[in-house]
Image (tube, rainbow, N blue to C red; front, top):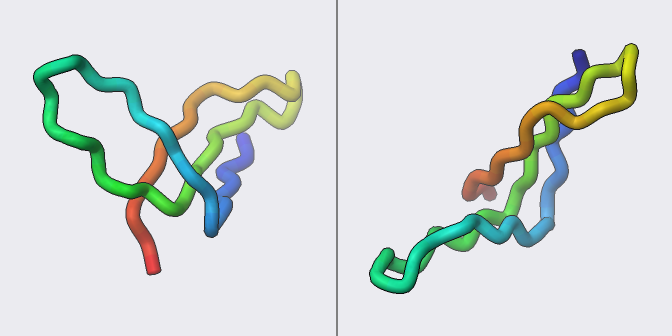
Length: 48
């Protein structure tokens, strides 16, 4: 398993018409199965 953290990215989160605007996430994290080369999970967060 690899955890890869990318900075200076734009992460678009899903929402709904009545939901508030999501935060301006500028980091993206990928959880990758190194043996199979498949992405399991992707999430964003606000960092420096």
